[in-house]
Length: 196
Image 1 (cartoon, rainbow, N blue to C red):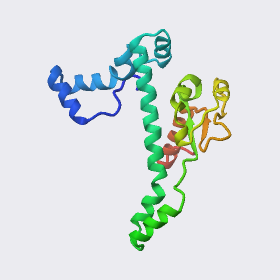
Image 2 (image 1 turned 45 degrees about the vertical axis):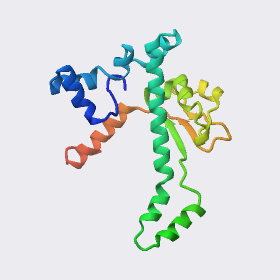
Image 3 (image 1 turned 180 degrees about the vertical axis):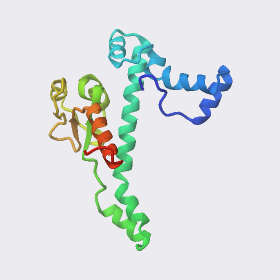
Image 4 (image 1 turned 135 degrees about the vertical axis):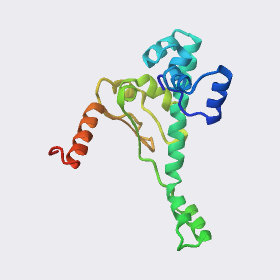
């Protein structure tokens, strides 16, 4: 979301092109390189956006609120889909009676989300962002321990959830370059280029 627009109705793309008289390439540049945090705040660096928000700058506050809202929305939608997975499987089995499945769905607990993982640059290093994202999500079983959250930066990993949280909240460092290198070696090895 640093420079990209994120999810949007496809009709908006045509509206932007028509209203601004943009070519397909110009629209691509606008939506992928000049939108997101950059388009709202003037910076694609979330640290600068946080600083601007703390200084009371309206665009910084808006950008930060939009970023947090978007992440919360994704967590909520994934939890809804994952929690509904078992019920959906019961209702689609061809060898079972739908009425029976409905009763079964009501009598058994839903599938549970076990953990939400914060990783990569922002997830690993910004206790502020993690705290804002997890604020007021207790109703979904996500309860953050503010003291644990504040300590979990600088490459540390662990659980930042309270003991009462139904969902574990994990901070796990990642090495994206190492993952890319390992996957590249596997692809080359499968192609017969070298041993993994």
